[in-house]
Amino acid sequence: MKTLEELRKIREKAQNEMKLRESSNRIKVVVGMGTSGIAMGAREVMKAILDEVAKRQLSDVLVTQTGEKGLSSKEPVVDIIEQGKPTITYGNMTPEKARKVVAEHIVNGAVIDDFVVTRG
Amino acid sequence: MKDISLHLLDIIENSVRAKADQISIDIIIEVMRNKLLLRIKDNGIGMDQNTLSKAVDPFYTSKNERVKKIGLGIPLLKQNAEMCGGSFKLISSPGKGTDLSAEFKFDHVDRMPLGNIADTMISVVIGHPETDFQLKLKRKLINGEIRDYEFSTSFLKKELGNVPLSYPDVIQFIEKDINEGIKKTQMEEF
Image (cartoon, rainbow over all chains, first blue to last red; front, top):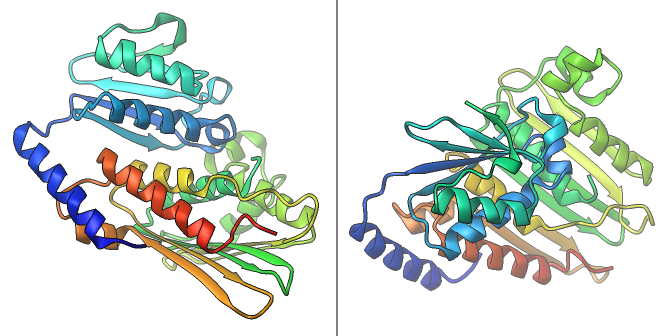
């Protein structure tokens, strides 16, 4: 690895931003990263979500991943977990659909019914 | 799985499920010996003999039990390595972690491509912030010269202090750094 200088700059920038905002996570996004999920493109879905979250500067969104969830036929799956609301599980995700979920559900709060596989 | 980086992601997820908090990944190409080695070592709970044999054999147990408990990831990787003149080794014991090696014949026509190693690393680093990852890439050239590269999250965490690895600029940094490492070590060249 290289350029400590670059890392120090990132650190300063991030720390300045962190001072300006509350660091609580409003929404948790969990990508299913089991064998079948991976084979069906879960990594690309996760990458698209990370990219969209970064572009929109959604600092209160935590993106993470988990193992197999027994929804193999619906992989890749993504859970949207928000306090005080039922967990929404989206299935058959693609990078494009995942970007739409960020824009419509996470930013605007509108669940995309067509992509939902389970609620609760 | 269509490439090595996706197998790597799958194996790392196994390690995390085995409660590993240190996972080291080596990808070593030795052109002279015509081999590409993928090795993943973790300090997870490990497996006993019985579980170990189930882990490599897709037909060992009923499908139901298999899919839930162990999955097809390891047998698939084993098959992919052996199909192209390579070999597979899985060493583990309870409390001692797991050490997995898949060796591929480097120039075999059916050898899977490396795939996007940077994306796999970003996925696991963001997905498992509490786990330390170390990635080493090494290529021994025909003239004996060695090109190597190392990525380590414990180093990153030390430099970044309280800034999470999921911070967008950090993700970008990781992607760029690993991709430069892949270029430097000529991982994708013949």
